[in-house]
Image (tube, rainbow, N blue to C red):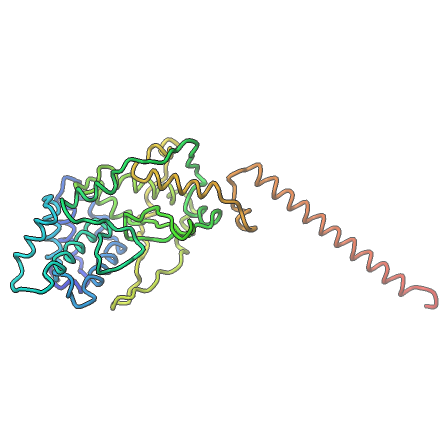
Length: 356
């Protein structure tokens, strides 16, 4: 299979290698970084899923037809062409007139951008998706991405401490915040549904391949990897075990019927953060979302026995609570035993009473 094969066909190993060479293997970054994506089934599941989504109507809203088409568009991204310039370049490739030429071109550009950067770009035809989308209408894709991610933090972080207990497992066990895996980098660490669900971008392989990206803001991929190490520390066996037990992915609604996502195996290979690296001021791009998430975590009070058991944020309070529970349990147990003994004694007195 070559890159000239239809997008609807999942790429084979050789095709994947060619795609990676054009996406991330020919930049200033070490080529070895791209090897992480080559063996990441999670990324290639996303790749195929996006192609199926774009072509679900027979390709009536997307000009791209082959893997080579996407490679060519990504090459224009890397040349820092404006969206208008890219659109004109694609229009010149049309061999005949179409009533929806603008729709076809925009669909192809958004598909290539999504696959190249793992960020959802605004496509009005998709309607409301619930995901955070980037609106790219002019300028280069680099300018659009920088405009979104490079906003200065606005929330204060006085008193915010990212202790070791602050991880994805305890967010669910203590705060009741459910982890929702996402393929959209723009959704990473975003709380939804009244702060009960947390979008989590788990594609560590993709992030490693983009550590020296010329399109993403400097340090964004590296900082995102640090948030993965913060919430899913490699040294935490309980978190590893919990991740393996996450609910099975929902089956895709697209024709292939494949699962909508699979967990990136490199997620639990991001290392762990030392105390100095856990300081909130070390996070710039994800600063505000981490501040909000930590606030939700800190303000949560246990609502059931399971949450009380796992909530070790205040060691003295946890110890006092469980000592009180043990004392109460023993008191009730001995009281019950004494009541039973008394009842048996009364019953024995009636059995051995006068006239017997």
